[in-house]
Image 1: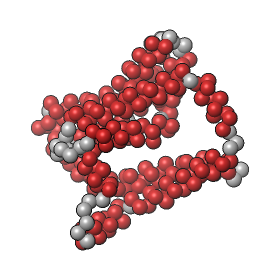
Image 2 (image 1 turned 60 degrees about the vertical axis):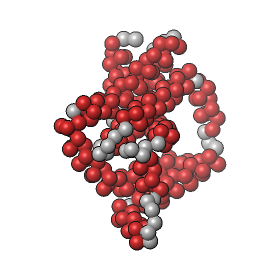
Image 3 (image 1 turned 90 degrees about the vertical axis):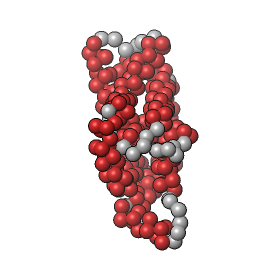
Image 4 (image 1 turned 30 degrees about the vertical axis):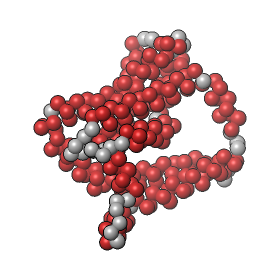
Length: 239
């Protein structure tokens, strides 16, 4: 591989490092008052392995995958299912409006009910009550949601495939790529642990802001994803 190719792959990896799965969720885990280092490391290891395996599948099965994709082209049944899923996600996004979420929270408190499923899930992901099974599930879920939309990663796999490397070299380059993807999160973890007195106040303030706006952010993410999925299918269904 040439220096230009390596530089291009490094640049693409740094772009991928800013995604919700590789940076957004780790930052959310880091801004808590108390963090579990093991849980965050497990999350980063899981999403790294996920992308590494996906990269191997794409690199070594590109021809077969292209054949399957061509075979599915024009399947109106699958297009209608995709359209329904997209519309469903878009409608679901309105449930996460901040005002509606606050109203539901007030009703639960007034009725003496416990925390919502969303709040229980967050409690299982961060802090002293973090459950490793939930951490692994969150990593896989983030990877599955993002992988099709991470154009830099798909482009990087194409660059690696065109380089015509031997199988061990492909595996090694992909491993280096995913390590660069999670490097910013690992750097933030190091700062959080080694310089906690300096960075903790800013992290806690950021955590309060994220917590206050998490419902709106989740709603926007779901809504945008639903719109894009539905728009893509609608162009074929109604053509």
